[in-house]
Length: 354
Length: 166
Image (cartoon, rainbow over all chains, first blue to last red):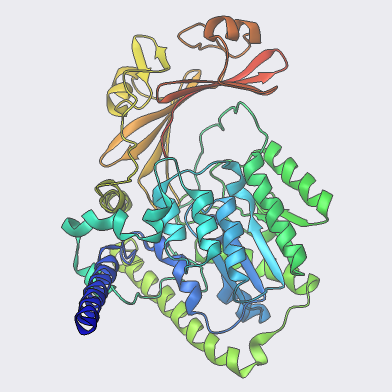
């Protein structure tokens, strides 16, 4: 009897193991890979592949990952930095990205781009997924899921993505097999590069809003971010990137300026400082003023890097052999991507591979 | 060519999120036929309706603007007409009406409320708000929302919108 019981338990355990392994492989196969058209969905996960630390951390939406270049910060100032940003990354998601980063390292400066404070509620499952799916599992990820879900989402679908993506089987492509267990690198320490140029044109007159007060939920997470930085001895800097659309209202700007003044934080609105930075909206944007292209991002980064260097005790890593080695590879990849994009632009009139 | 890339990207996102069977977002044109609407001339604009038919009815806009979302999830479009703006959002290969925003006092809601109306006129027309603060009144009906901004006792803004995941 005892032997029979043992065999039964063994069979059940083996069946369970096979089932779990199968589900694991299926989940890997069915989850979107974000390697061709919507590469922004791959940004979050890339952070975990970093081997060196970062003294400056950027958090925010596309206004950080398209407008600041950590490679430029290193090349010009020796500053090590990383951008933990993703498409429409909301204020609470930036807070949890910071909390998640603190599980691995403690930067000296955190830079938060304030545009996302215009949103006070969860917005879109598609964007939530692009931000959260790439996070490594932790209590922080759980909290990020809870804070981010729209009414129609549920936690289990995030914890077991196969529940959400099971019907993608009919849309599977070669990409799903190719990138099942490993993905190409698409960013440069979180920076999404674009070298093309599309001059800024006119924008519609800004909507007249019912209420210009930034929402309490979003502002609450800004406050949590500030507190978390304080507790960890991190300087928090607030920025508004020089993107011209969506419209950043003066009323919002005043609220952020007042908040920064109240807590002794630096706040820079680079829309207002664009000419001082040297941004030329005819040449420095790739999508008519919404985001910077490479030249715009490098100008902004160069300008902002000078502020960082002059105001914080940041290490110049350019003399450190470990960083030299790691960044030599990063710079090579950066230069390679720039060259390929410029070649495509010249050959096809547009960038087709990025 | 850029437009083609955006359309491909939007279609890819739709494949990723739109066709999954359970727990998915469902934002396409569902609120047409109920809730708050706006009428311009002979064209009734229902939130969530197919934007192409609405725009055909309204005629050529004074201004047109389109912008990509952060990750190219299609194009958000803004059509400016005398007195109001019409915002649309993409879903699959179609655009749907997201909102109508009043830009001056030359237009009014179907119940006669315009920028400059009094708060009492609003409550007489629409009753008790679902959400009320000193700065705004928000009314909900079906999958639509009417947000009325207040400057003291006077209406400072009017926005009629579909309640959707952007």
